[in-house]
Length: 191
Image (cartoon, rainbow, N blue to C red):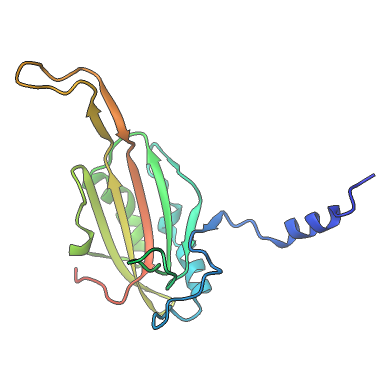
């Protein structure tokens, strides 16, 4: 004998599409007054998620989750408001420098219509980071593609001093990561 509500569960599972995307923005939250989002935001997010650069798998990397979609104008904290965007994070098995990122992403980005841009706002936050920035119109909306590689962060388990040489053992504090973000941007930096 089946439980009474089994048909409801089956109906819900068949009605919800399995897209490989998750939402990170609290889609039920109200929008920030005075903030505007692109027209037909859901279709724009679909276009971002289907962009050919999202399908690029960096060598030796595995996804750190699904593509995360965020709608714009949602209060994230006291200072920050969400942006219409998709984000995909990769966990590579080695560090990536700018030349390697360019070799992997430039051909696909160019073929998809992205233009390389120098973006002063996308400067590395720390040692071992590199960022590639691109721009193009997606569904009539100025959009930016950022690909940021973070090198593995290690810490000496026995810090050296004037009397002691560095330890041969290092502990990984943060793994290497590659973040791919496509978001609506009011303007694009010049190439």
